[in-house]
Image (cartoon, rainbow, N blue to C red; front, side, top):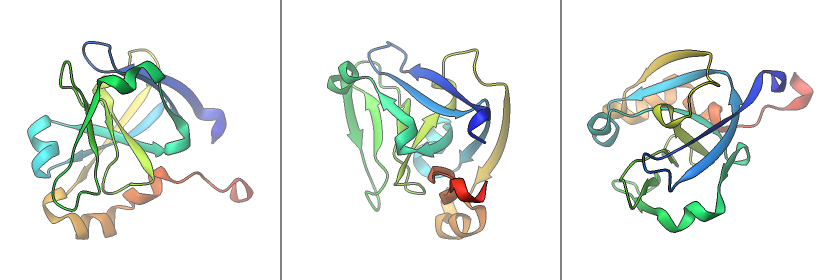
Length: 141
């Protein structure tokens, strides 16, 4: 699968927050209906933490919002307010990248799946979403 990996660059609206992520060119996007995601219109895909790199000069422009279980870390730009990535409750060992914050040109295909954040525990158990922040075992490929 690594041969399908590309580097996606992205960031916030004002470009103070910039990052790159190694992920497939064809991505599985999750559309969640929890109170936060539905208000923001969030569409995201999750990757293992080791495949995400925040550019060092971006850190000073970030702040974080949490609620509920405080597991999710909703990181956003202090200047423009855009959440271009965050640590999701479903994948606390990874990063969720906001699909619309990826620079154009590297995503070739999108599949959108629904995540029922209003019924979080059931959707988490049924969706398999937690597997998307795991690095595949090389011996099983």
